[in-house]
Length: 244
Length: 94
Image (cartoon, rainbow over all chains, first blue to last red; front, side, top):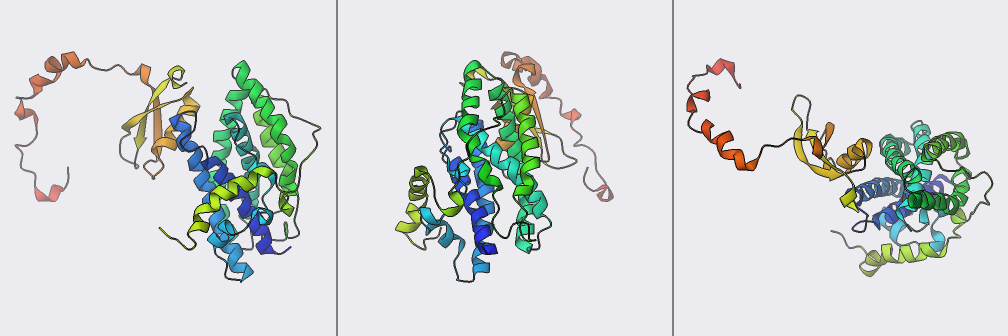
């Protein structure tokens, strides 16, 4: 697998999770979160845009960020399954965010030394954004986990639902660790340290043995991604090339 | 839901050298969450370099019914304004 494909995987992770978060806009439990979640969504979508553009340049077939985001079908998307999981309740949304951010933070730190100028630039910006995502999602996970009886129950349920999707974060392609992009597997220690620290404060049990779900990197997605893409892509497909 | 969550007043300092200024209020369960909510709600367009949050309940406000006795007596004391001095040009902005 070449670098453009690897960048596409990374871009898909960011766009899909960014779109998922944006689905809360206007529906959040309180006004403060109604702004906080789209703030994070915009960070992720901004990252995705830079990565799509770079992937298109390196691929050399003239595909733009919009071509890549709006005119590929579900089976062509290469995001991991974690990021496409539906929002469900607020506990699930915050935990999904934390799982992803706790992985991306050391990843972008490592990518500051990338041999690719654009990746280095993206990393410099994203490393600050994602540090805030860990803080924001982490504080919520702690308060919900160590909150009321119901919030603790829902948080622990979210762990059981989402933890099986975390193994895919660390699966390597063929170019990871070769200079342009960091090794994914190498992030496991830092990720687990961040997560376990927060879980301890949240009084959540760390699941040791859970079967792991995979398939996103080969285009085998859950049924929810198709619905999400249909909505996300409908405008661009109804009015190709429209600008505003 | 927000009825159970305390209210906080938010103060933002736009630049170094300026004072924190009241910008509005937010709901949050505690001071850590209040700072995050203030950041998310009030600094999205680069408005600030520093945030203060204060529990709204900690603020003692003047009584609007007393505004006459509080503030009207200042109205006719124009000599308290330093508008009668000539400021030399070399002084510049004061």
